[in-house]
Image 1 (cartoon, rainbow, N blue to C red):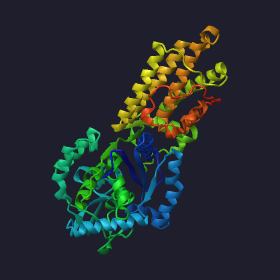
Image 2: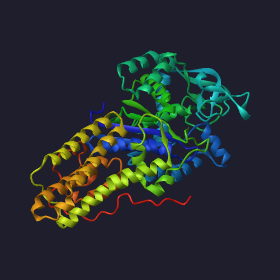
Image 3: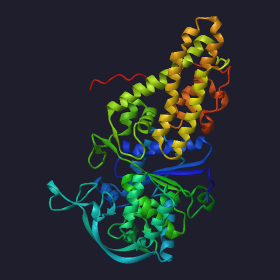
Image 4: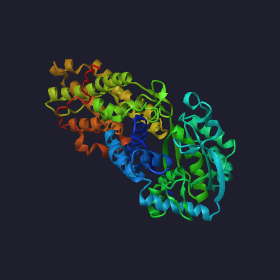
Length: 525
């Protein structure tokens, strides 16, 4: 069992049938911000992401493109999915592919153990299957088709016709775990979050669970069932196991004990797999269930969920090439309540970039550094006696640090951002009222000028630390410009200690600071 400071967090592993859109990048950034925060707070942190490469949909996509599934997956991973991590500045510790030997071998080990323990049996199956979801659909997600699909049953998520599959399959006795799952949700109310997701999962399990078909024999792109190689393991049963195969299950007990259980960040459309099927699998194997399953909402564009199949996806690079990776990360963490659906619009992104990043934070940083350069020859002044105005800034910095850390602990990233932004607003107001440019005209106000600029610079020091998990590029530039490198690298600053006043050493040399968020010219489109 990991100690209390262990924080193992995962994204879903993404399906390589197509290229990533901003919905995938949103999930990656949220998990990365949480990981960076915990890592910088001194917790034993591990961030896992990766790709899901088996199943019928990949086989069909590869065949349609005149290649093999493995060649297709290799190409998509190398050209699209791994570059995504650089595009939005993800500091992941590991990247797992379900075609990795470490994964395939230990999926077989897990499945064999469940089979040996009597949790798996052979049976016949006939049901409507959605290749897009890679799932036999429950009745609640089967609707009548319209238009070209009139008279057919279609998937409520993909709006594509379902296929009637009839196979001899192997089944996992999931129905036997309903009571244990309900007891889990009851005893650990924070196991599934947010509350709307928890309620949905409880309602689903209370209806009763069916046994789960966990193999396919109609195609062969997948991990072989170890006792019957005419079957491959169902793609979801295979994919969910990445969370443990990546941290040593079956091959490195010490690593597994150090990391597991983990926290899963998922989109709400795959909540049931993670909050029902996955813990039941772990219970059957005698392993601990996850620490938490947190389901975020959908990104809506023009009021509709982004979808590869409906061609409504926006490539992350379309945003980062204009606004930069920091702005991408900031926007999605600030503008959307994590856990709820959120709407993306170019107008909102541009407005927040200008008002909050360029004018609010970037301009504050530039002004303070420029005034230290101008009035104190580029050396951070010492502070004299503090007034109530200075102490108010100190109080806001301390309170914002504690509030942001508490919000991160409850996965309310948007609330953490709001708390930190109180410092930005406080410092901007403070400088407007204190008027250091007026103080600089009177030698008698020299000590007061030093106090005001030290207060502003020390406030920026705290901001750089607190914002580094979200906007690492800009904060690294600010850290260097403030002369704060004397304290060590920015990423080594203990984050929960950021609010302790007086850490920036007087006498530190500041250097000129280029605009952190340059003005973006409106395009002529």
